[in-house]
Length: 333
Image (cartoon, rainbow, N blue to C red; front, side, top):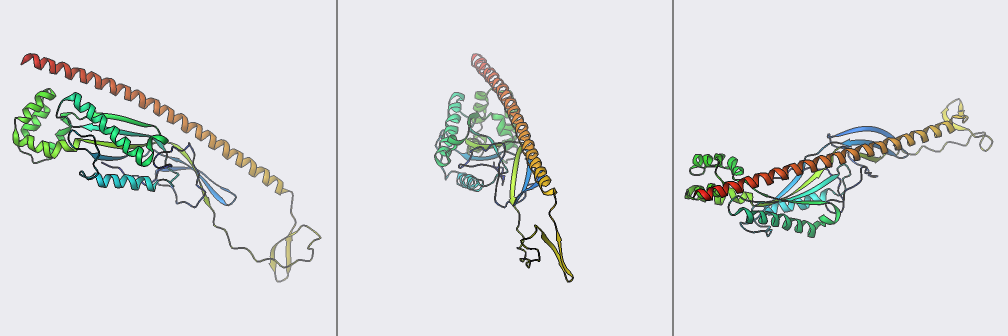
């Protein structure tokens, strides 16, 4: 139920979303292999690297709920382990600057048995209950946008679990799940098989009564990493030369036969101007990368909204079809 990612830019407990760039002025390990280096320069005592962080898999945590209940119980099933890992995840990601958050989605689920209207309400209540837990412990909603969803699992979601089990009348149950019966008719036929229904009730349906927290990462983030360069040991002070105080000379080598000095030329000012031009160029490049990353993020967000609207429309259409089927079945009885 959980995909664990070890690096992720997040402050303020779980999701104070950083800007398109982030900086760390302390010595840090090299980024993970899922990043692409854009440039590497020096700035005074720091090595400055710019990266594009590629898309990460979402990180998800799931907790179970009792039948007909929307109250989180930490001792139920694997809940204690999931909540402990969620807490450890939050505690361990606050100092990482190479991952940035796009959104947090909390989804409540209900198993397919029972009235559809009741199950929809129950699934939403489970999502809201888990959101309340995260808000109370991490201040989730105060620092980022949180989306709350609810899903009533269809009977077809049981098929893989049934196929992998050794339950009684397994093939007969699979045939029913593959049939075109309405949910109400399918549940009635399953309940008419006591051994199979008892197995479903104790081993499969409880896994569907759950709620999840999913962290969705941004992709294409431009990140700046500043690493302190190691300082060399100080050179021993040179002996006073014969022209000390009389000319601006610098000792660059010493040998048995005497002292070799180099007079400062006129290139120092040119070097400083060139350095300033390079710094300005880096700033322009960074701003351009930020604008590109922001544009990509907005386009992806718009695409996600379009997909969500299409899925919602399809779900409403399927629901209406199910209602019509149920009504037709009632008329046939």
